[in-house]
Image (cartoon, rainbow, N blue to C red):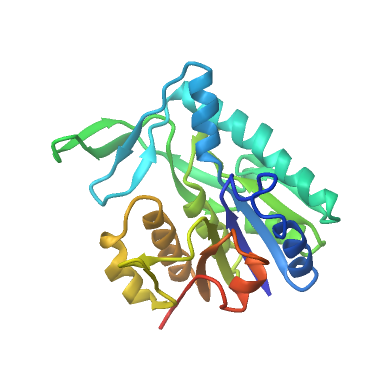
Length: 269
C-alpha cells in the first residue's frame, strides 16, 4: 500500500510528539510512504527577522495564502528546502529510515504554471486583481521518479516548491502539493497531520465524510482546515481511495490514522 503523509513544519519539532518518528519507522516497514512537509509559520518568522514583511491574501473562495513576490520566494525556498527539509531528513535517518530530501524543483517533481494575475478580496469584501508574483498552479507530477524511489525503499521527503515553465521557482501550497503527489502516484491513502483532532463542526470532530459531503461543507470551514479539505477533494478526484485529516499530536499518529482511530476519514461514498 502506498501512503502520502502531509506533515506541518511544527509537528516534527523536538518535543512536540516524541512518538512520531518511531511511528513512521514502524509504518514504513509495512507501507510505501512519501512525505510532503509544510513550514509556513517558520518561513514567516525567518522572513520577518530578515526584514521582509509577509503579506497574506484571501481568494473569493475563502482560501487564505501567502503573497509571494521574488524576495519572498527566495526566502521561502531557502527555509523550506535548506532548513526544514533537511532537519526532517536528519531526524528520520536517526531512527533508521532511508529518507531522501527533495523539493518539487528536483527532477521536475512538481511542475506548475506561474499565475499572472490573482483575484483577491479586500478589507471591504470587494474583489480586486493583483499581479500574480511567484505563485504556481500545479500542472503535473513526475510520478516515474517518485515511484522509482519508493520502489527502492526510500522515503521521499518533499518541500512544496514547484518549477515553472521558464525554470522559475514557484510557491505552491503544501496541502495541495501533497494531493497532487498522491494523485500522480495513484496512492491508496493520503494523511494530513495537523494540530487538531480532525475536521471540526460545532466543536465536534466529524469521523467520516463522503466526497460530496466534503464539497458541501468546504465553504463553512475556517482558515487552515479549508485547504486540507480542498486538498482531500482534489486527491480523491485524482483517484486516491481515501483521505484522512488527523491529529499529529497523539501517540502513533500515522498508524492510528491508517486504522481510522484518529481523525476525519473522507472517502468516495
